[in-house]
Image (cartoon, rainbow, N blue to C red; front, side, top):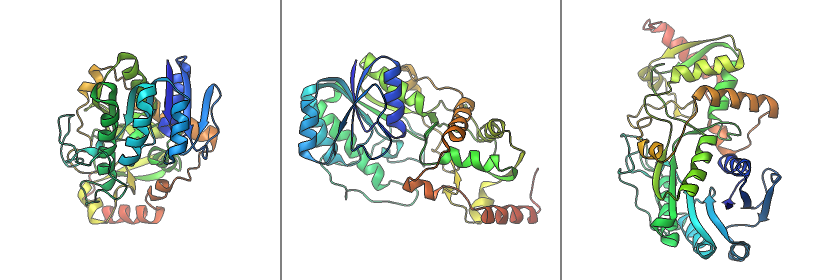
Length: 344
């Protein structure tokens, strides 16, 4: 199988490339070559997807059985790139996001839920950010989906909509932050309830499913998350303690107390968000099509191993937004204890 990966050296792209190599596929990557070194056994093509001459040279280097686009963020650009590749590739797999849904994260979702409207030729200025609702990022990704379909046609296009993706090489830093915090030990501020279910997907399972859709010829859109009702927040933190062998205790503070103390959801306490739809995403379609998700404990274990072995340090812009300061954590815990409402 001949595969072209647009991107391929960061988190999701790296997992796709390594999974494809392990499966014996012939892999070509196309990127600017500004991040990690290219992997062995990969045919690296360097170029900028926003430069027409670079894209034309890329198309001339084909053909491929499939393209997986991990680096498309502006609809107009995805449309140009996909149109150039349509004559030299059989299928196009676009890595999208749950943020394309009109009601995410407020309400439970399925693939039948309404998607934000964005034209396939929209520029980077299209869309607006709203508090606790649609974002420009979501609008843009929705337009990218439309662009992929416009260029390749519905039968040759697969749209993958992951939610939270965790695992080794994660650069946003959600799971790495929790692992570092738990490893530090002591009394850890834990958000909400330990029984709250969560649905993060391991990056390697996302990669395997992306390749599976190619071999099976699956088209259409798929929500790519762990099944509902499986992993819990309490289990996640317990897995962090087990992986790090930390002497840590967890103080579960109710949502309303955290909100009253001004704790920012999703960022200061990663993966904590109170809206009804955050962790209620229907994934039965993807499971029926071959998505398989490993236990979260294995994701936590392998991420910690990668952090220890690599000396993990993320310089990605989004990583700077993650994590509550020790001072604020102590302040919130002190206020919770003073309130006399601690339930143990």
